[in-house]
Length: 284
Image (tube, rainbow, N blue to C red):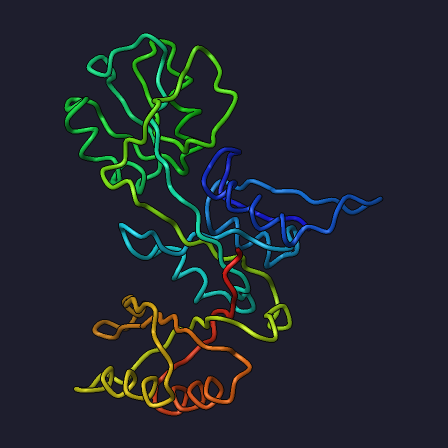
């Protein structure tokens, strides 16, 4: 099993990929080994699965503080044959990575993924108000950028799980997130509808309602009619169609159940578009 993730090693996506591999891994055999493969951005991560370079992808889909990862919602919806078939929840424990002996007030730049920078904004504003916040493609790349600064005046935000820091860099002893109770939901994405589990705890769909009064209410009433409990809903503009929105809906139900199948059929019959994005169970 080869799982693609947003690299480099040490990112939260890498941590999620390793968690998925604990269940999905096949064990090392001749010509077949388990491996987590890093890519520079999320389009490359999903493309690796679509073209067969990887068997699956670890994709962050929602953070408990900042909501849906919008780029990944759009990418998953736009894919032709990729489906989420497992879910994992990773605790986010953001730490400051900095040059040993450097005072926070001396730090001039802080690198990390945009979400990590946002999650630690209060700490950064208080401890280093004049530092420039630099967005990196991942928390792992943020560490690399900080370590490239020979002056030691660059720092990074990364997960507490990161090991083997080099060049005299150390990690803060405590979490620097403004909210300590912080989790990110990851989906394991594979190619082909046949990869979906026979039974699931949740389903994930994307649907477009007719552009008229009450259409979203009608959609929600359909879901409620079949006794299905929604766990989240997120809206995104439909590309090249101003004024229209696509709704991403996750709901608690077994994909194999009669109620789920009837609900999906009713949604498809009463909306302009309905696509199944996944059916999955939470990895314990």
